[in-house]
Image 1 (cartoon, rainbow, N blue to C red):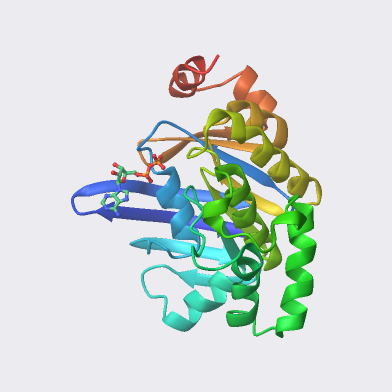
Image 2 (cartoon, rainbow, N blue to C red):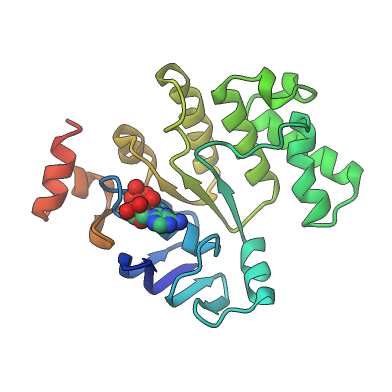
Length: 243
Ligand code: ADP
């Protein structure tokens, strides 16, 4: 359903992605693991052109976009197929929880206010925030704010949800509630790519694990293979830090 081909990206002289190929099937939960600075977030951002790769192609459910030559229209089309959950939530501070979720539905998807509200209430219930719809982000815990971020992505009914380290800004006691919500969504068969440092979560929820280092995919496979029998020395070293 998603194919990334030969993705290259440099920031100035630093080559951050060195020709990444990755295929994601419908319903896959792909965890991208690897040391800090290995290019995980940049790769995720190249999928929806928050970063434009210098070379390569992004293909999502029938739409193929060439990174170098993509025009605005192609990028808009591609973005409509994706939604992103950010490390720092990126909520609108002056909008309520409900408005944060309806905004994209009304503006990007041109849905009526009533329709957007119905959809938003449904997804807010899914993430356990039905009692917070009129709250402002500042009144919520980090875990609750991230659940709003997840509801906002879910509401768009995208082909794929891209999670960029969704729990790494949270206090440790709030990580569990957010992972539980992501786990529930995964069970519904929504395709996801998750950049994460939560090894337990990757092992339990992902059906594929991709290990990156130095701008390349070093190893990929089923979680039980990669975690129990890593083939590459770099993967072994990385995983040993977490055990
Ligand atoms: P990871 O997610 O694996 O920690 P990143 O994709 O965030 O890695 O970053 C990979 C490298 O690219 C890092 O060295 C980082 O400093 C650099 N980088 C990321 N974004 C930018 C940017 N906008 N400008 C310059 N360098 C960047």
